[in-house]
Length: 322
Image (cartoon, rainbow, N blue to C red; front, side, top):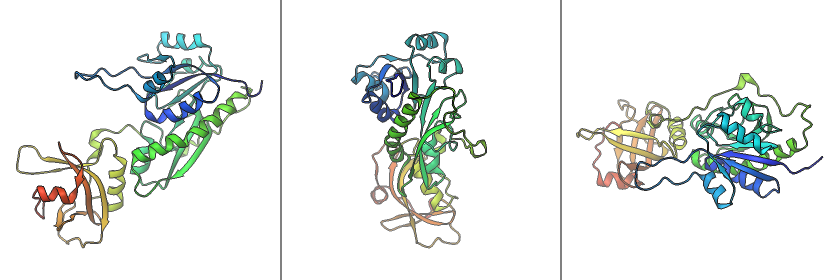
């Protein structure tokens, strides 16, 4: 029956999923369940805030299921009991097994924040910015048990802006993903289950986007101005690009670098990468192919400030190595 309403189970945890899930809620299809990761147990007296998808489901009175693993026998049994047509997965944090996917008549689709097969993995947006890509986008795949490996049903592309952080790009991509998700749902709504659906991914073009670690934020000053700028923007909002400054105390000062700019200030021939080469209302640092100006930073334990405000309150002699 064409254009029949579908019964869906939505699976997500982070903010990237919310715009697409809200569009589905407004579409007229039925949401039988929202599956999300279990709540984080806070070690402090203040409870951890609920995840964005959990909060969205609560606000809209939708039933929530949060098993430790979606592939456990009892979790799969619950999914089967719903007799859902389709699973819609985005920013969930678990890979569904073939047995879990088979619990929905049409299987599952996944909204991913890259132009697959590029950047399969947990941090596609960050890696696209870090690598200096000119464009990014979203892909909706028909899911298989292989991580981000299913055929692409719908996609959309957007340029990466010159000053855009990974957080800013991810916000835009979450909105960009709404329409491809609805398109993919409509394609599956009328799928005869016999014809091929989606376009297979070219295995020769696969690249990985593993989850970032705090150590990934450490700046390598031997890199070029362009590479360092991409790194600084890719690390926002987490884990933040940083450098360590020896201050003569037991612990070096950790400086989070939030914004830099290329500088035409001449780099001394004997300057080492990461060396402060001028402080005259501007904090200039030698790098692999020239000189950069640090514009905004966050000293450990302090608020974000301009580099000028920092050096006024913190003597940082020319020649200091960051």
